[in-house]
Amino acid sequence: QLLNPTMVSMILAVALAVSPLRTPFIDSPVYDIFQSVGQASVPLILLQMGAGMQGLSCRSMPTNDDCNKSALSLRSACTIVAIRMIICNAIGCLIVFAFSNSGLLADRHVKLILYIECASPTAANLMLVASIQGAHMEAMALLLFVMHLFCAPVMAACIAM
Image: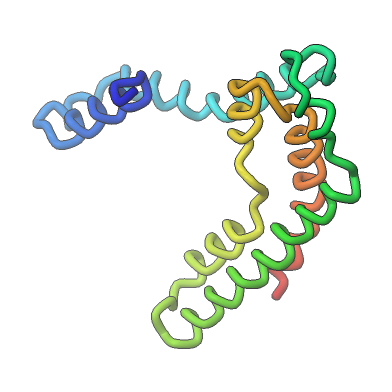
C-alpha cells in the first residue's frame, strides 16, 4: 500500500520543508513539541520491543510446522553475529580507510561516524517485521540480543583502529 501513514507523513514533511511556512513553523513552540516527541521516539520503541519480546515462546505463535524447525541455536546466532560484526565491519572499515587515504574523506568527524555506522548492530526493526509476520520471533530476538552484546566491544575496537 503506497499511502501508509509513514509515507503520508514524509510527503507532508517535504511539502512543509519547501514551503514558505517553514520559517514560521520552526520559530513556533509547535516545533519544540515535535522535536521533543521525536527525541523520545527511539527509546519508547525499544521499550515497546523489549516488552513485546518478554515471554515469547513458539507455542504462543500461530501453529506452523516451520515454527518448531526455525529455532536458532546459540552457535548459529554467534556465527551470524561474527559474520555481521567482524567480517562486514572489517570490509566497511577498509572502505572508510581507502577513502580516507585517497583524500576523498578528510573530515575526522565524518570518519568517526562512518566507523560507528559500520560497527552498529542490525536494525531493531527486524523484530517488528518478524512480529508482524508472526514467525521466527524467538530466533530474531536471540539474534538481536547476541548482536547487541557484541556491539560495544566491536565499536570500541573499530574506533581504536
